[in-house]
Image (cartoon, rainbow, N blue to C red; front, side):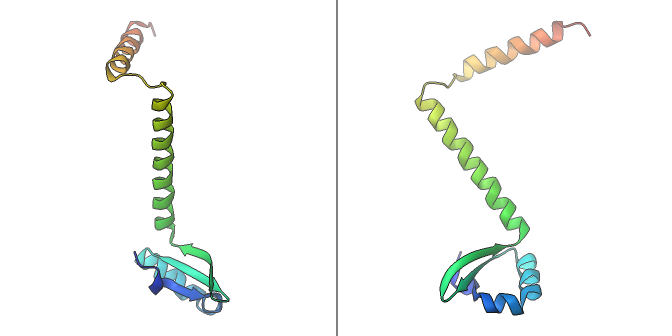
Length: 96
């Protein structure tokens, strides 16, 4: 993904906001906004933002999982399956 084509000064954003939002929405893109020649903000369409947030959530889950494995807080697949089978059987035996 090349951001160099999507860099605009804040003055351009101010005068063309409606058009930029429409373009971002249509093309599912990201815009870098600069002030005094330095990148200061990022504007994204909502779908791109949601995908980014979902990806970050998955990365956090992976990080936690790796940390739990290193700490010895993980169960083997056999232990998990056995536990699930017991829970399912207990639910079947419950009276409603």
